Length: 309
Length: 263
Image 1 (cartoon, rainbow over the protein chains, first blue to last red):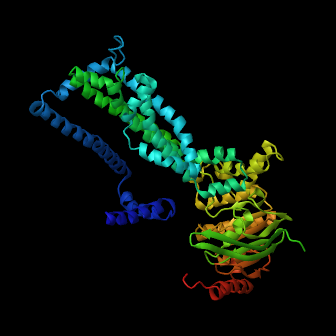
Image 2: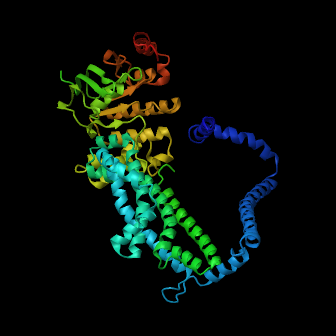
Image 3: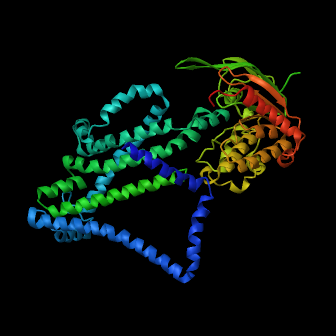
């Protein structure tokens, strides 16, 4: 283990130095290539370039396709030889086309399209997530700024953080006497810890120099908060939000299985009770794809606020 | 004669886990208006601590710092600091970094248009007007330090404090910045205290060089007046015997009388 760490660092460091500090390193690298490239006529050179790009693209498509194919083969094998209750990939594909043909149909409150199920779940996630941001981010700020407050709340947070958010569902049901707010409450609990911890860490990570600049400029408390604390902490806050959102999307499926109603989690459970397994597998894929979309959305936001870029 | 900036019997003791640590002892120094003073000494001797006390970022345990006959006990823009690692705010553009200080200092005395012009004027002084809209992450280390200097100058400080401003730069960039600082100094005639560990830089830029003894309990060992005529040219000075004599005196102090046993 240790030797790995030792070997990695010297490999990485020269790369960083090369790209940022010494421009000399770059020309020397291209100088080696140039004679070779000049020796070839330019038309063949662009052709070679396109071929290289095409090959890279083919690999990017071919390798994931290979994985899907292998998994599909195992899946088919399970369908034919292990558990015939598991539908074949082909049957699942037929079901997927059927479900996605009318994602937003409505046949009364107990029979709605899969698009609605996803939207209801997303709504609960965003509700709990927003509430957690409203409470957690200011709390994290105070924790980062006040040593005493941190001392006061740290032990409680350490105890509660590792608890599965679902354990809070009965408390939510008792408090709100309704399932929808309880599910939102579970997402709130899920999302709040990463937000508190990352915001507090962000405030602590503010370089002392920024505070010295603020002192020399004689910025007031409010100005320090607005002009230094908030922007300096923002990247950390967004990291916390990003973590929260991806966990919240996982937790909502389990929470809805318990609470019922409209939502992708209960949809999966309901289809299980009807022994409608193809729908469950389609739902699994859709949940995954929505998760990717949420993650890339947060990653975009994160990139936008990354000042070092 | 009363001087512009007066450091009187300043000492500082830090509380550490291993008991009190006496960093500086009985530092007294008088600096005239428009004078360029550098402090030189081995690393760890407490040069930056002196600067931080003058800046008001640290409180002296005893003694007093007087600027223009007023006691200094808190940081303020009349003692603008150029930090060693530039300390630009990375979420602001070059212009906004300078403008932040300008807005604060001239909130009442200058109109919006005047503040805009003054910000640009100071960026021109350090030859950075072309990168106004760039973020610190997009410019080189030398450029960042130029912006740091512009930010400090734009506050029109009574004393400009520079804490090893070129320490993190390569030799050529450093020479460029030293020339820029001399050019600006000849135009504006600022009062400057600069911390350095570079003997050539000290002799090239200073009117006086303050040499600190090794810590703990560091104090002023010797003060050397650099009577080389200005404007100074680094190429001409390379042939100048008096320059070499002055340089030799600083080296003699640092490496003969104050050699660190385990440097």
